[in-house]
Image 1 (cartoon, rainbow, N blue to C red):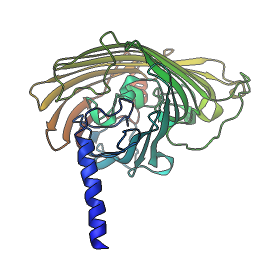
Image 2: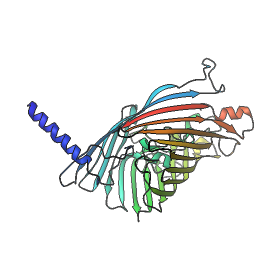
Image 3: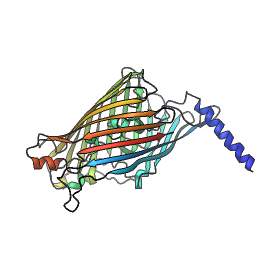
Image 4: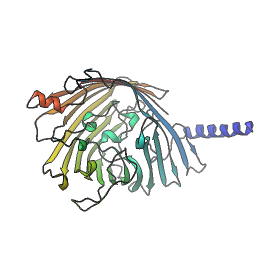
Length: 406
């Protein structure tokens, strides 16, 4: 019995090694996460190649230092250093593959998550052609390039604050202040690439985000349509399909460029309180040792009739970032992030410059990322209003992240 188990194990290892040397894996097989070294890793497939199974893992461990200004601190807890220490944002394990040479799939579990977020992704694609594909399940919504790049291959360990910080609704309904990003969600999407230059994504989602895995929506009282998230994205890539990484030490001679627009309408979002419209424009470039990207986006909240609140509140944000490989192992990075958190009706905005560097431990699939970000305020009518605008946000932030991917 022991010999039989040993033989089976050897067969799997041998097959994995064989698949690892195969550099012609189906281009549709993807997980949106790794690999940082752009290697195929371990995989198993049939002799004909029509079925393939590929496991993977991604582990990120962070050290965080957050310093808050005095405004907004609890009188009972006046410590300026909060939410600091060590964290594991992602401990991902999953598998991707293909079946029948027509369907590709991916399932990712996040052991560091809680509740519905443990299911990070679960989807399959029906691939009729490069021009027409259908994705069903839980995956990234087609909005914000910062989210659409691979998690393990971002320029900074932390996404732009303007995407993930809740807006300040200028009246006392604090439970309905969303973030500008739409992130992960459950739905169906039609997508494809035309002439290797034009990409499109059109989808319908629950609109409840990564924290909900069940159907909870209704019909809209105001619009008479299903209360769902309707989203789309169009991109133009003059030099071929843009890779989903923000710098790769193994590919320092590439030349790609992307221009894109995106938008969505979330009907009766935020506990059925408002209809949220989002729109964005994006640019990205990979040129040799350089990576450059920029985005601008807005969120417009139109409260439903039963809220008895007539104004429409609009918020916006933008960032520009660049990375340069000083050596094949070291990538320097800089970012400027800005956000109108208190709506365009009130003066004042927040700005968040950041610097950092990435160190790639080649051959070990390890990546060290370090960054520092500062929070500044400008244009507010008074110091009190400025302090209210940045409430709950850290003034000085340092993040060190070590990542392993396989």
